Image (cartoon, rainbow, N blue to C red; front, side, top):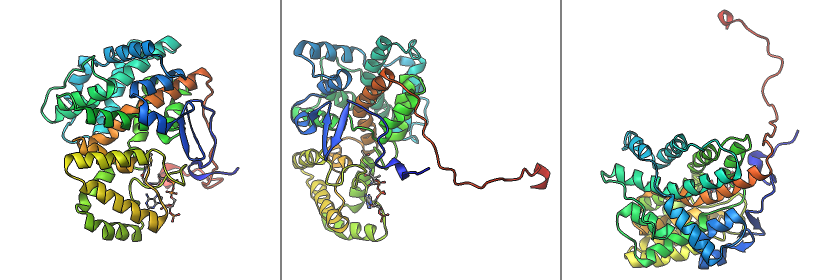
Length: 371
Ligand code: ACO
């Protein structure tokens, strides 16, 4: 039996949701650069779930359906108030809250396609409501109900801050959502597929995926990037900080990638957004510091920034609390998780690989009193 550590290079399934071929990322054949420049996040969700871009009326209907599904059961919010709110990480709260949503959905365990489509809509629409409600509750504020007339991006910022965002913030946030929506067989998407391949339900698949996204080697990296930037504090301290960390073999968050070896195509969009937004906020030091770190890590280690690196200064510039960065990743990536879950259900087979055994052989049983 041969093994590949971390399943590197293993092709574990077929999929028509998104692809990374020769360093180019596409969602169902559409280049991420085109989508980042032109698409609304709602169009991208529609694309991922239906394998085609929506026509105008289809998009309007989809937007209305999403907006109408955004309210979460009161009981879920009531229970959220009982979490040890000042101690739990928002990703842990989100994992619990999504699992909790299932308890209040009568069709949580229904497996027919129509029920799955309804659950998809609810989950996608309700994740922003949960993330923003948690943030507000822990800050001693009441959750803000979603507004049906706002775009998905604007609604998130509105529910988070209690005021509608300006156009620049809405556009930037929309682009960030588009860029994070799907990414082939990343760790959280694979988790979701493994989970539902047992014919478990969509809520379980999404809950499992949130758990996988939370880790710092995956979605959790964006929050840690901002932690590092804050710790460095000033641009002229970046060089010694990073060189020292590299000498100690510390991993620099936001760099490296299992699949991209010549650069993550999403990073340049986030870099440009970071430049623009930090100029608007008058805090260009976060951008300058990021560029400096980028230069050093590239020169010293040949590693390039991934999606998480510049997204940190983007979200910071939008005034978002640092531990909400990874939940935002989830708010976007759930669109991809759901697309993959639907695809898995369409042509399901249990996912059950093997392990090469490395433990001892022929052990002799020793009674408890003799151990
Ligand atoms: N900083 C310093 N060194 C690194 C980094 C980094 N960010 N990433 C990889 N390396 C080094 C490793 O130490 C290793 O060196 P070695 O061969 O001397 O031991 C070598 O590069 C290969 O790294 P692996 O960890 O084996 O690469 P792998 O493909 O398993 O991991 C990963 C990819 C997890 C993204 C890794 O690059 C990493 O930990 N990056 C930092 C965390 C991060 O940014 N995660 C977000 C990824 S994107 C996403 O999920 C949204």
